[in-house]
Length: 549
Image (tube, rainbow, N blue to C red; front, side, top):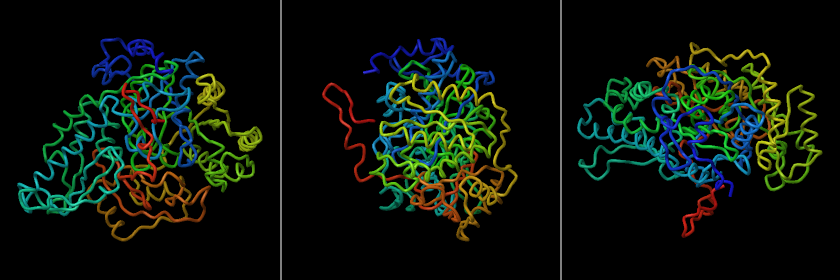
């Protein structure tokens, strides 16, 4: 196996300018970057390349694979390159998608370690989140109905890093006064935790503690927000997270440095690895490739309007828009079981979806390349049809064959990205922060999703207006919706027209610094599919794991 040829992590670190004394090794092939270097001074000098995609099929379109292969290809071209990615969540690993370390010859390694416990970051986030939940219920138990918090208005739930639909809504505290106050609550998946978002947006320990203290946990009897700092929780939470805050270093199969840190989902959170890891990579490398979750309507929009807006990292010099012929045919009306069959007409019909994602990147004023992630079932006629459609629209196009050929298969893409990075850009955010929250939602929905209207119940509208009264109106919005459509309806494929976005709820993530807007039937605690990936995973008597793709 290629993993057997991995280089010691000390060598990978030295290749990008990290000395051994700035490493905290986890075995021979994984390490955390020490606090002194991770939180050190120095502005980013490298250039950022952001990888996004068209609306995916349920299997995904290979953004992570493309990002890894692109970084390897840039290294082959003599550039000092690195890749910055999210940590896999156990939810998808054991659920629908399986592992998230790339594929074929474009992978980060050691794959199984990264897909499972890695360096324990997600476990630490889970513990810190649930510590705050326990402190809330402890305060309710001892203070009763006259305390700091109104038990009917606690908004902080618990989390775990496994898909488990039965925990979405639960009742705690039943069985008498010794078990606390009975109330309704529930579980989210750790990737949707505000603590995950806080860790990924914090610049250092001081900033982490401040953001943790700013987390709103509910309302008091006076109807005013209550924050974690009022429970004196931020210190203990930060203690649990002090090591998790340090970026992780691993490698690709071609020994390109890979910073893997943090893991928020893009359909229910902001969907990008930590600013700390990306900022560190940009201080050390000439080019840093990062990926944002799902398609441009989710991960990319949030990356621009939330992450870049923090000022911790610069806007990308270029973007990559990943497409597959499978996804084009899927959005062109072909059923999943027939995607391997040649169908140039469906490729052209599905191009409307890809074109909307082109428009989304153009709305932010950034140059980009359309990358066709090659599959074995792709035919020459289909590839040529897509190439012609892109040429007609005068956009850069490259075929990426990194799954089968590694960095060598990404050289054409790397060349196109280097050209795009030299183009003039005029990056701007989609909306100014001084717009009302309802107007921000409307702007994203109309410009990025293409809706004709936004609607919500009066109670939801009042909830959002009350957020503004409570002082949260100046925050950006993080819209949570399905990843399978430009709309909030997963069945609306292609490029929907004349549709309405239905907003069902909204939550304040005051520590992370955004307002989460839930749309359609989106769930912050996924469920396992009928046949979960967990059923295919096995470990033999020697400890060798199989089945994690």
